[in-house]
Length: 257
Image 1 (cartoon, rainbow, N blue to C red):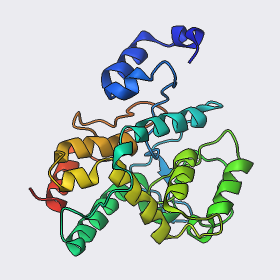
Image 2 (tube, helix red, strand yellow):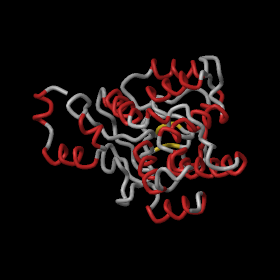
Image 3 (cartoon, rainbow, N blue to C red):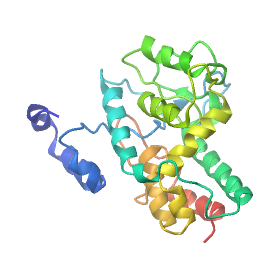
Image 4 (cartoon, rainbow, N blue to C red):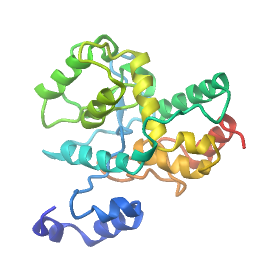
């Protein structure tokens, strides 16, 4: 970020960023202009569904270049958990038990992010939607849609993947352009985000459930932090779509101590 741009930012905004970001991310504040989006904006539209969820907010137009800055922030946040990439996420529990718990966690996240559209959700503020349901598209077709529609938001799927994160995860799991953006692939990509947030460490009791929940909220804007608000509250219409009490109760049910 240029000194001129930083000088024009409200002091309260700068204080909020530096006061709430993890120390490592705060150290990089001078490099990345924090736009404060989560992994997926909590404002989503159930594309091709009959009704929108009651929690959907009125979309706000995104300034030009905002998604590029959002992607930079997401890459920065993901790097905080880089040491956990590729490790086994089921090491702390019998595999069948762990898979059941992970499926419930992913459903909880989807309830905050995707509304009724689930795997076919597209970010509500995307003015030009894909021509097909996301689950009928290939990864390459999604990339082409993103390339054809610059200047709008592109969060897509059950977990509201944004472009840079989607491409990084696709490379990481070894998926190809011709692969269908199926529920199975979406879950596979989301598994990696869970691991980067500290899933294995939480299962192995090396991380508290609360810390893991706060890490999840740094990835998905619809989830609350322990403050009760989204990590990205108030920026571009973001807010938590569930209370901390509900989030905490559900996590305790899924992952009992």
